[in-house]
Length: 113
Image (cartoon, rainbow, N blue to C red; front, side, top):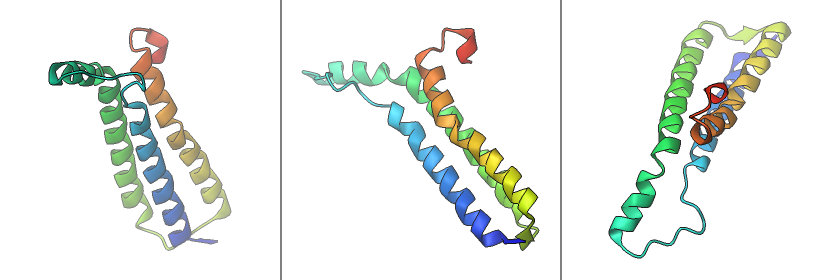
């Protein structure tokens, strides 16, 4: 048996990192040097295709995290098999930032969606 608190701490960390990594793809290009406010606003508007997948993925991860809390609040310990399945689940959670980048960059292609 594994203490639930240890899996909860790992789970919270994984969700926190995954949710933070999402935003790293929402950035202005390094070469972007606006000369006035309208040009800056135009550059920020160009980020909308990246910002929308970020928001959607953040909401999905947030909802999964809340479900995680609800599900795991019932027990004080768990078996090794449960911990192994839980790690597999978190492997999928850590893929969300990558899939968000793919959707944000290639939204016009069906496989990206």
